Length: 555
Image (tube, rainbow, N blue to C red):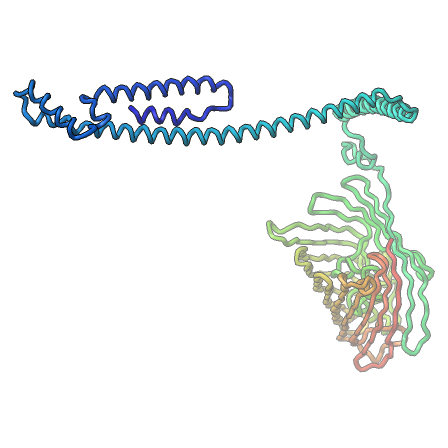
């Protein structure tokens, strides 16, 4: 029981600084002291002999006490009378406990005193802080009183009036903005309602595409080309070519009918019509062409026979006496379509129209074997021609290839002679490189004119390079070109030819041609060509090398 009381005293020995718990502490302290006193009294009462509390004074007193106890208690055994002599031991232990408790209470008092000292210091520090805050509040109050008592300056009044005016103007602007936003919201609602009711407003050409009547009113697109050049043949004086203007007209009547035409204008040949045709879109992979269209013999005559597209200033050698560059008056079906899921597009052109025919029977051998004289006859003739081209185009790889065929009817009146032509073409464009190649074989029946048939064969291969990514902006506009061409003839007696009647590289004799060129592109449709062409005739020395300069501008 005593250790429990000691623990209670120890636990409540340190009072809380809060006044709420101070009374509880005093109560517990009183209860603890009362319990200690009760325990001390109980310990004294349990001792049977009080003598051990003080101990014997001397041996004589202890001896005198023994006979008095033995006299009335003779029947009691001596063992029982000897037990009270050991009673002083509990009292000694109780004293030790009380002494230890007194020491612990003293230690608790000292600890309590230390904590009370710390609490006192904290209270003093808080009091100082409260005094500092009170002084700061007093200073602020005095400053406010001084500001209230000071007279308002005119400068401050002006500033206040300026701020007031600014706030009023901003309020007016905000009100105007609110009105504008409300008006804009109303306009948008009306516009949206109008579009929902009547559809969006579109330009007239675009609106015609949605018109079920297919009206035929549309703007005309005009493109064109201007061409100017200079030629210098070996052993002859150079000359400037006359300026040539070639406008190109495109008209879209509606989404199914298109019209296109090109005209060449110069002081030499006057007016020449390259093509004038109506294109009717039958479906997404077939178009019907009616009128005068470019004859699809190979790729060059179809796509590259334009001076600003051709990388050199003149066409390859084979187009002089082997494969004619021409147009056909007639009808044509053309189109393209991908082959299933393959990235390959099949292209085709099939045509039927007027063929080539001389205006009158040739008067000499040179005229009979000159292909330029045959294809330069009148347009409206009785001779008919047909042919076509089939190709494969792989856009991702930049590869395009095809085969062509052409059959011409009677080209010489009074003589049943025909000629047939077939050819192959290839183009490849990848990065800075551009490669073109074409071969043609023209079998001409000429027994009625010269007594034997003629076989004309020709080929060209052209390679060009342009460094588009060059750091120099001037070098990036330069393009370097090389072309090799040859023409070979069987059935022509070269000794009977008048070679003076032909220009450079235009005579129907076996020839190898080498052309070196450099181009400067001002931009994509404006180019300046420089080229030097070497013509090596087999078994002939015509000395017809030529330097060419040409400026072509497409607009």
